[in-house]
Image (cartoon, rainbow, N blue to C red; front, side, top):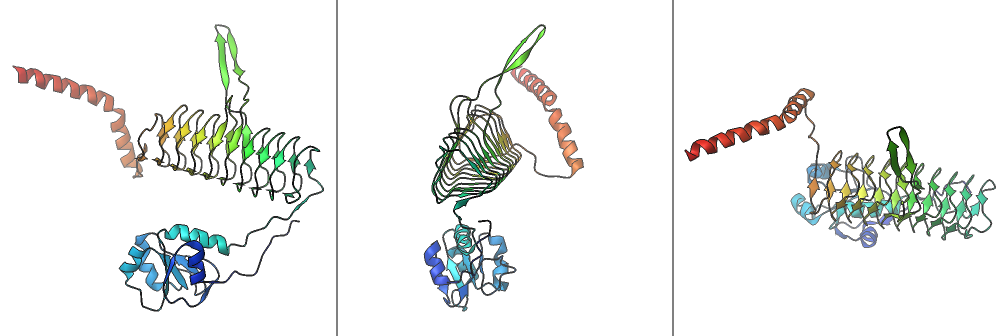
Length: 360
């Protein structure tokens, strides 16, 4: 049950690959491809791709058996009839990703339960599931078909995991929370821990922070991938929701009652505070942080390291950090920023003086 599936190398023709992944073969259709590789190191049995025009010069020297690229880049190369194999795609990067999935040696589900696993008597666990060592499945939990729970996974009472999802070691899904179909959750992630909710009760002689019970759920939609060591808090009363198709990098914090719109991607170490709603098809850069109770429009791009303190109503790219510069230059600019308030007051006085002189 712990072995890895390592099938023989997959070999396909460029024509078959184009048909499967959505492209058109131009030039020679001969030869078989057995994997993917970068332009600079690809051999005759490998597929390479070009999606950034600045690497156009590498295409002439590549040893790849086939190169996937756009029609515009192929026209720039003028390479239709030089005997090489080209695969034209409207989106070379996405074509390459699908081809890489085809070639990848994927570990398949191996149904069964490890002897050390603990499964509550009333939990629903189909025979097609793989339950690894030291997995714990609580009362009333429900798994879909072909779910893989690898070592030391905890599924809380009444929680649910959809068909074909893969949960890597040391993931905790708290009680009542939901993971959709075909999801991937990487090691160390916690879904459904308490949101950070405390009411202040302080008087002249002291007091305390009163904990607010977090009675909502964390709900993860279908086809979501969550990286390692992420924290997705359950809602205070309503649910925290990650909509279908989202992709989260490592070490991301999603606070209580946040809603992340479908197909949004979030890079590592980003944090979203409570009750903020992020739109669909957004891109949030690494270490960005969003304050609570905000709304971010669909198709918004937030640059890495950006602090978002107000709602964003109009799509576009938003940045709140200085581009990199030598430290001495940064200190000079920072000193100027600190003086902006006094400079503004001086400017206002000069404007008022100018208006006064002009009127006389």
